[in-house]
Structure formats: structure tokens, C-alpha cells
Image (cartoon, one colour):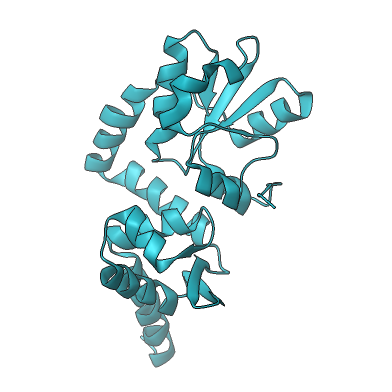
Length: 219
């Protein structure tokens, strides 16, 4: 093996090492919703600020996140490369090749909702025809950072109190943070039990945005 090839493979192995931690993958999911400060990321992940900062520095050195200053705060956002497609490919590989992952997906996620989820293309067609209500069940803060055009934001914990805002004569498509986000699964279960026609989006807001599709954000 040539020195050049050895060097390149070592660099690829180093990037794989950076991703090889559950906390870093969790941080990337939260950062994919929009820019976040280290203190807020620590709250969301349940880690200490020092531990969160250490993981973020590793992700930054690997190019998976970038930073910018906002006064005294340092805000983290996804890196410029195809971070989300890489994570999606990792998820797909794991579900296809690791029996333990397939078992968890089948026993937990598939049991939460056995109906076929709505694909991105299906949703685009329904939005074009105007015969769908988009329901974003993420917290208000994440909705403000960015959301699908025309989506109604009702966080999961407020759903049963705000049922009157949802139509029963139009199909509802719920979405949240991504493929393993349980918020949309739980919203589907709640609303179906109340007689609503609802399905969930196959992935989430980050994947929609990464595909170059239109998004909205609070002013």
C-alpha cells in the first residue's frame, strides 16, 4: 500500500472514529434542527456543559459542525458537507446489516405505527394539491428555527388541549426531528384514537431541509 493511500485511509478512519460515539450522534440530531449554543445542547442531551463542549470540539475538528459567535455565545450548526446523508447511510447500513438494530426498529418503532409512512415525494404532491395539514410536533423553539412551509406547530405535550385546531376532514401528516424521533409516532397514536386521519412523514425536518426543499423560519 502506498504512503498516499495509507494516509487517506487513516483520515477516513479518523472521521469514523469521531462519529463513533452515541452522544455525538445525539448532538448532531439536535444541531440539525438549527443553530444551538453549547449550554442549550447540554440541557437537551442531559450532559454536562464540559462534556458537551468536549464532544462538540471533536465534531468540529472532524468538520461535522461549524461555529459562529453571537456576542459572548458560540453557536453550533451542521458542517458544510453532506452530514445528514452520511448519517442516513449509517442508519440504513445498521438496519440492514445488524440484527440487533433491526430487532429494535421492528419491536419498538414498527409497533408504534404499522401504517406506511408518507414519503417526501408523496407529501410534496399533497402540499401542491392543498389537501393535507402539516403538523409539526417538535417544541416551539425548534419550530422557530425552521419548519416545513405552512406547518402548524403543536408540541406533543399540548396536543390533547389543542385538538380543536386540527381538521377531521383532511389528512394530517405529522413530522418531528428525524427517523428515530418518537414525537411523531406518539402524535399519530393520540390523534388516531380521537378519530383523525393521520400518518407520519418518513423522515423529519432536517432531511427535508437537506434535500433542498423549501422551509420557513420565525422572523
